[in-house]
Image 1 (cartoon, rainbow, N blue to C red):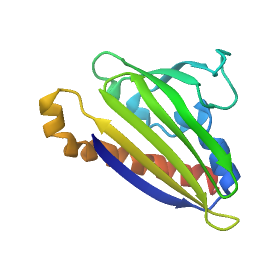
Image 2 (cartoon, rainbow, N blue to C red):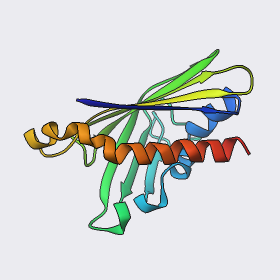
Image 3 (cartoon, rainbow, N blue to C red):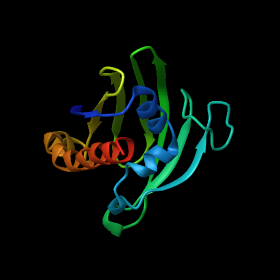
Length: 161
């Protein structure tokens, strides 16, 4: 699998940054409009609809249509880890159904003093296409870099205001 990583320093307290990212609303706010994201359903670990916080065992069913072209692509993610306490926090989601054969996104948050947070994203992925997808896997950076640059700029804009 290929790995993409990016991090940003946000001038906002860890609790604020963590709370924002741990919800479906945060996902929507951090997805560029050109992805045409729709969150179809969220379920908590016990099956309850629309949980306030996406904890371990939560499911997010969504669909995307990049650039509004082609059919919508279904994307089902499960939160497989969710930990918070002290000076850091993290959650990890794994794609259970969607366009990538493998996708695991770890979101890490680390306090940098009282009024700043380091946000670190790590995505382990495999591109579709079998052997060809594995061959061109390193080129996934071309699509991920602008997506995560947008996410990090948007995080700063929303939480540093």
